[in-house]
Image (cartoon, rainbow, N blue to C red; front, top):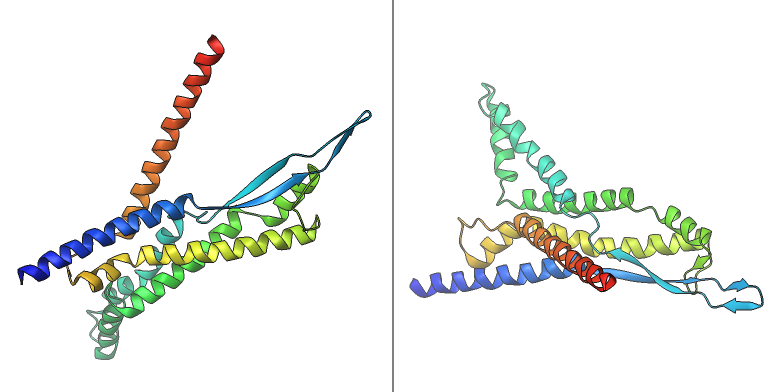
Length: 228
């Protein structure tokens, strides 16, 4: 019995570290799209265009899809609680079945939760990132993506890349959302309070804090250099 408890704790610890590392990688992961600037002619000289990169984050939605999804996935259980005390046996029985189906440890709850997170991730990404507008900005500044014609082909290319990376990010967010159920199944600890959303928020805050500290240090170093 003691060996099983130790094994469960070790499994839980390893699972937590693995998810923290995965969250850090997925939060910082970007797809760099190369953008070339057109050659510029100034007088008798032709200047070669610069090469820049358009970063597309793997997880552009952050924790927002999980917040939207959990508010909807809890709605059936909330409505069922109102009808559970009904005098109609058919209605009260159906309400009890709904509570069982949409229990946080049930399959229906976790499958619906996962699908809602994936759907809201695509929806939110489509709102915050507009491939058509980005392609117009690239064309306006005389840039182009190697091997892709400006205009509509660039828009289709960006949309294709965005769909592929969003699918990966959305699937990962879905796994983060149902992490407690996965952890309970692997460790056997039914009172487990490990939440994937909490890990995502904590890791994101820590990474942003380190970035802010690094930016302030760089600014201070530049000020010292310029003052000399």
